[in-house]
Image (cartoon, rainbow over all chains, first blue to last red; front, side, top):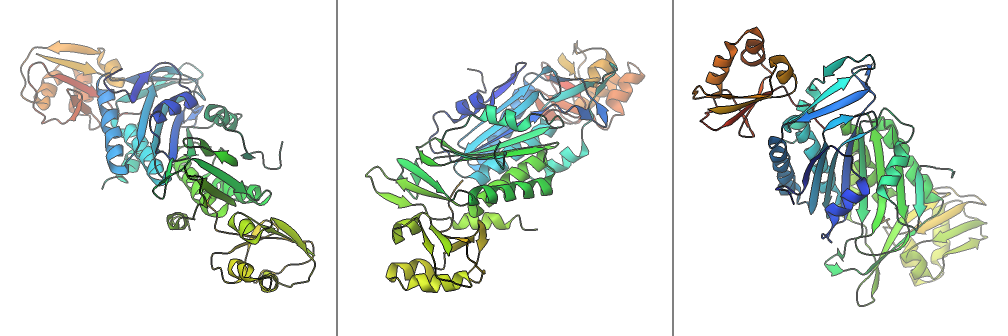
Length: 155
Length: 155
Length: 82
Length: 82
């Protein structure tokens, strides 16, 4: 068991059913499970994308994600939650990230998963580099809309 | 293929990975997939629940769900979506309903899936009967909070 | 002739899931008035029940919704799926 | 002595992923001033870059964050995961 068992940073792909079942295990009073999966789009900034490579800051990543996860638990009384983020090379349609949460009622699960994703986008140290069909590599720019999305959760 | 291929009313359980993959198939420009799974809680109104039985109105159910699904597509430019609702007898922790949607960006997928669930709760003709451990059966009352949740989406 | 369906607690309270009704009624309201003459449980379930939900041909309907021969009219309590 | 890390475009621009720096600096800002003397790319990446992100010991930090020997200081661009 790692220091943060509900945070996984891994190269390999994940199976939604398996991961959600693991997150729910041992929690009976669950009425709602929301899962978000972020996937590699084949288009970014109008250009076709062939490869997406994810780099991260080991150690800080886990700490940042755990902080976000625990804040979501505090604010929405979650029963359980799980964040998986892949690193390394990925291709269009591949799964990049999973955020899964469970709660008694649906509203909390919807808000908490949305909150975790918005904060992950602006606070977790991951960086994307994309390779175009002609071999050109470029770092993906941070989106202004992500910074705005984060603000909606400020209490 | 049924009249509404993205609506399934069935007794059997569903597999999240399989259903989400089917919903995504053929849609490449997806960056976000949100899945909601509603599950049987072992407690309702303070009482332990042993069995939950779901009844529905065949024909009207499919029509009502398809209407909700198409409205979600209109409002949030979804790439694809799927609604599965189980009927018959279920037990605590069982999956009852799946709403899965995909879109280019996450915000639309979060809102659309939440919208579909809120409208399903108040507009799709399903009824729940629960059996308590002593064998007592009772119809589940509609929740006032569900009617309120629906109102937030009125434009 | 209209096809009338009863769901969930209504089916149990009224003792039937569906029936063919031959009387001609212009509206759902007139049909309800007529059915309520069958007894107290019918009156309570349909006429006096402010939570009564109605569908005509699979669409949500009201007491003043017009019905015609061949229509399917359904009565049921507030829905509780999901 | 502090451990300094560079990520993503910073690593590529500056040509290194990490290094040990022995000079004593009281704050991240003082460390940046010092590193910027190495050349134009250092100056642009660290001193003049308003999008510069900083972490000290895995926590988000600012230019005025105090550092001490043994700390881990990281420089990187705005994050783009998820």
